[in-house]
Image (cartoon, rainbow, N blue to C red; front, side, top):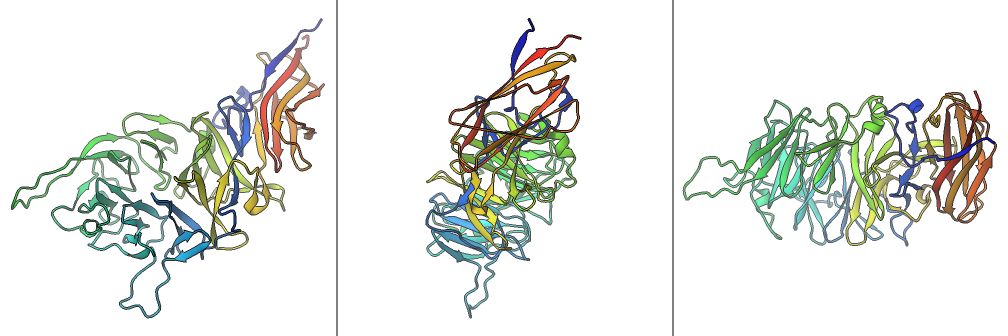
Length: 501
């Protein structure tokens, strides 16, 4: 009697396109989240920002979002050639960059520079930098936008640290400037860049420009194209009448890891993840580091231009993912922290019945409500709007489009190059069946064409069995699923029989 074996089909390993599919690596995972047990869920859906409001609209696409410590929401639109700053309060959009008629003297209320905005927060204000002189937004009611005073240098990045503001300097490119100190509701020290309490230090381990500056409360991380330098703050005591320069920031570590995409830096608790000079995605605390992109490295290497990639973190219930979007390529790469798996997040185009770029251009988390808010383009317009990510929506409600999830295995030979008869494929699903919830299975053998997809009929807590699926030596499997209701691929198994030589 022929021996029948049953082995799992692991669809929950994420995308492994950096490895060889013929050796079993999974070449594709689209729009999925893998939980700790290996079950495959769809990514969060995009829904409306406010339950009583269809949309909020800004005059340009939103590329910067910031939720303050007390829950106020601010947005920055794409430069054209300057960026407008908005406060979004419930169903109101307040354009802080609308110059009051007849105001004297004229005040620049827009954000200059033409780059993606970097936003720092103090108790009294937001400070924004985008490639020119920093802008401040005083957090009174109403909020007021105007240039940051005191003579700061043009910069692309700004941070708040130890009571000071720090910026890079796009003219003296290895220089990091810092302001005097301010605390509480005072901003006087943050508009002092020339006194003895203010100053600068140099990130000059090698003659690299400082392309990005970030902080993790303890230390300053200065990113160059070929190295990373970490600085710590050392309080200095100034004696009466002392005039010499005092070095307040000390270099405590330098790593031979550079940053090739200045807006790819994503903070993950005390660590940072970013794209290095070899297009690897690195996760580091400044001492130890981990390369997390090996599973998709070949895919990353094949993208023509990484310089405009930007990153953000999505923290939403069980979902904790670091995301990087390549605008020129159109794909968003999501790394799930808990399962250490990769997926590509994309939208869907009903007209072409194919994937489309995921529209998220920035993200922020509202601490008070645990909401994950995103900046997206307003449908069929150059305007922008704010939307919300939700684990309870299984389509992109805002765009009325599907979330089409797709996972593939690599080619499986079950430990032998001999012929196998696939007696049955068992797929265990959890979900709520409906008329528009659908799942499909395809397979191909030895690198040949995909078989015509078979639709699966799914019931409540259903195990679906497909029988007598042919003979193969190596087989690759694909599952695609979609619909407005929840649908989770919980487990997959194959029953097969080894055939005589």
